[in-house]
Each structure stands twice: as structure tokens, then as C-alpha cells.
Length: 407
Image 1: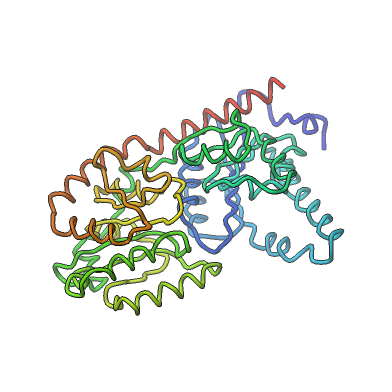
Image 2: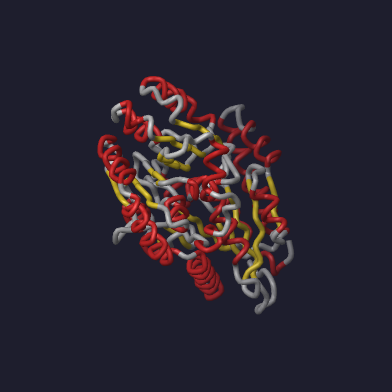
């Protein structure tokens, strides 16, 4: 390593700075965090920042990023090696931990990375990317897209507070970070953004065509629920809500459930199948898996439901549905309550499936109410533009790198 690299000097002043965006999700799914990374990587101001993206797993966003001219790496082989290492006792675990840090620091030096941005959460970087960034002389920031819990290990708490900044995607998440021991001076609250106009332009089929492809009968009330089949996403709440309706009303509904099925939540997925049988919803509930035509499916729906049973950090799918002018019914826990305001949707308690059933029945009976909520939703979602999100993050990069230069 030359003297300039050892001092953390990346390149002459004035040129764009290199940013490594790391997506550490590795459960086989690609969802909201991937979309936010894509939006950021493809919109960062080119005169200020040059992005390099790294995924732990290959996914549907890799070709999209490359087609947009963003260099993108996948670490499937590297992660397979890392995840099978360190099984020979404490000494082997320490050796492999050091190896992970060195591998990352080497990448940062070779690519002359000025700033590492962890797209998910500090807890996925405390023992590798954060120390690697420090070793390589790069700045380090992380998003927090989950409900942060104070780490039990002191070294993890210490490592998190070595980050230059932690981005909270909602006020709810920011409060959790501060309450969890993260230095308040390092917490920056920046809402995720949505390309409302772009998302609204993405449907390629008419609602009638989509409904026909799904086999939805004429006159049926179509509910869309988009979210991977994880135990906290609340699919069971929706199934219980429909099951509470009389059989004659229940048959008026069709539910399109869109999302992948992570191996880690197999028990939950089996429970959903049991609920379908118990409530006689075999014709009603359509489990479609992970799809590329989510905008078409939501656009064809009468209502979009979000039903997380734990506080949702924000809820990108809520904002996407609002972009389409859809009536949204969302769990009042966490971030959605910060998004759905002023009649732009409806909030409910996910602990009370009967309340969700009553809301759905009210909306099914009143097309004018659905339409009015959808119009207010379009107006409300303008406050969460992707342009605002990218500029606020770029401004944070500016501040972080300026502080490091001064130090």
C-alpha cells in the first residue's frame, strides 16, 4: 500500500468520490431494500459520486443495475466460503473473522473507495465492513431499515458508534436507534423515497386483463398484499379477517398475495396454509410468489393491504400503492402511521382482524370512498419523492467526507 492510501487519501480533490453500496440481505429474496439501493445507485449525482454495488446474493436487480451503467459485484461464492468457515473452535472463528475483515479492506483499497454504505443495518456490518472501512481509511455509514435493538455484546455497540452516520428511514426507527444506545449525533432521519411517477407508469396491462389472468370473477373485490412470507408481515391477520366474514360475503373477495417464501419462515408459511383450509379460502387466497409485475397486480386491485404485526420501519409498498392512487389499508404500527395521513389511507390495529374485516367491507361497499382516498394518496406521496431521498443522502455523504478531511 502506498503512503497516500495509508493516509486514507483516495484521489485528487474535485473528482467524484467512490461509494461502495453493500446489500447484505441473503435470505434468497429481493424486496424493498434492494429497490431503495437501486434508486440511490442510479440517481446519485455523477459529478459528486461514483457508485459500486455489492450484493451477497445474485438477484433480479443485478442486470438492471448493470444495464443502467452501475458496476455491480455479487459475492455468492465468497459468502458460501465465509458461512462454512470458522467451525473448528474459537481460534478458527477468530482467524476467519480476521480473514473477512482483510478481504473487505483489500476490496476497499483496490477500488479506492472513499465511503462504504451498508444498505440494511449496522448489525450486519459490525464485525466486518465497519472495521474494514477503518482499516482502509474509508468513511462508513449504514442505513437502519429494521427495528433496532441494543446489541448485547459491548464490541458491537462500540463498533456501531464508530460509524460516521446511521440513516433512520422513519422517526420510529430514529427513536429506536437513540433508545438503543446509538450516539444521537450519528443518527440522521431520512425517509426512503419512491419514484411515484415512474411507478405509476410501470403497469403494462389493463386491470381487467390482469384480473382475467388471475381468474378473478367479474364483480369480485380484489385485495393485493405485497410482502415476503415472513412471520411478522401479517398475512395471517388478513386471512383471519376474511375468515371472520360470513361465507356469502367471503366469497365476494379475492386476495393476491405477492412475495417470496424465505426458508427461515417455513413454519409460518405452513400456518398460512392451515388458515386457508380452516377458513375455507382456497378459492379466495391466491399465493403468487415473488413477481416482476407487482405494479400491474397492485394497479388491478381495489385495495392494497399492509398488515405487519410488529412496527414496520416504514413500508415502501405502502408508498408504491399510494403512487398508483390506490386506497391503502395499513397497520398503524411504526412507519406507516407517518406516511398515511390526512385521509390518504386507512390505519387499523393488526391485533384486531375484525377491525380489518370491517374496513374492507366498508371500502367494498363504497367505490367513491376508495376513489377519494386514492386521490389523497397521490397527493400525499409527493412528500416522499426519490429525488428528495437521494439528495439528502448525497448531502450526508458530503458532510461525512468533509468531517473526515478536517480530521
